Image (cartoon, rainbow, N blue to C red; front, side, top):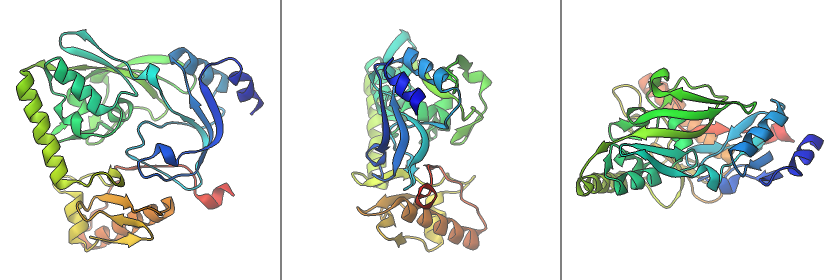
Length: 304
């Protein structure tokens, strides 16, 4: 810890210890981070990582919209980006550069303002660009791989590299990108289109989402990936899991693939509910559901 105390004296970004992470998750759940680092800029991030030299495990937390943080918190470094990583601009008339902390829906809005199509689906995804690139976020037959040109990333030792989209093997809700890479920014290519047509497509997506997905509740979106040629929500419903609950953790009444914290749930309740649902679906259908939700951190008993 002395090394980190020394670093704090040399940077403008904020470093805190044992800060609760629940306020950074859409579930409003999770224990403390051993170290929470909010870098001022790219230079500071690189400096910090080089000084750490792989001493602690590291995780970047974006919007927290697809992450369940365990009750025991995270025994390592959580990095949270701020304004310096939220830049967005045009490189040319068809290309957008966006920082990793830019919200997906803000990228969609920026594209609309500049008459660029191909970004409409992002209006329905509640995360940040960094997370969207890593998991190849998508909906309504669209995903990040279709618009990504390249990305700027940093390894856990502070070294920067540029990765071309053509060198990435994307698949449904994932890619072969190294888990030890921290995404800094990305470039995207759209197609010039009519503003009214783009807006209408966004409106259609948003309306469809409102009809089928819960909102204004403590949830982190789709819990499981859709198996090939099937739908996770349907498998859950057909396996008699609708309405299942453990404590204050429950399956949404509106969409079976959305799990909800009704107010007083613990992360362990949601994780147990996820496990029980997966087991029931496996027994009923023979299909092993794969998580789309990311679970990070330590079990509480292990942290005591």
